[in-house]
Length: 179
Image (cartoon, rainbow, N blue to C red):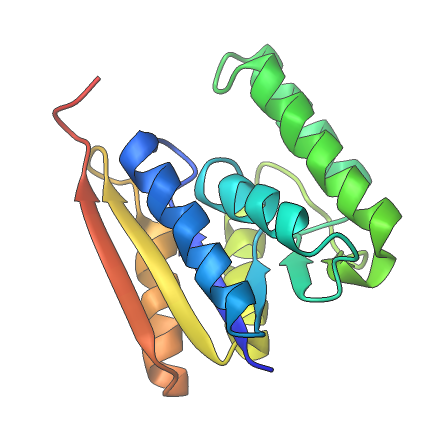
């Protein structure tokens, strides 16, 4: 069995991208492989949603968090209150990750030895990317251009996979001019 990393934007997707993510996860599971991802909104969320439908025991799912689920939940709820994301998105993600942890505690890889604050979160997100790539045999990246300065995490993921020497499939989308 191979572990295939799924990475991409948490900022924005559309129905075409969602369909491609779901199709990709189906193909991974049909081949007898598993997914590795980061537990964020949009690309990660859709990939995990599809994976849970296909692998109810979650034995072929690994989700790496930058901190504990508790601290991660606080972080998302804070950003919902600030208006950076909507409350429903935060709660759906938190519920999804809690459900995964309940189904298979080893599928949710928390990072308990961290001080996850606004000052440290960027470094911890990039550390999470490193841990995802360490666990992966391949990477499928959904590089989604939305506006300048976004997509740095996906670019870092692709670079780390190339440095590791694992295969990279990159799907590129431009949503910068779309609502």
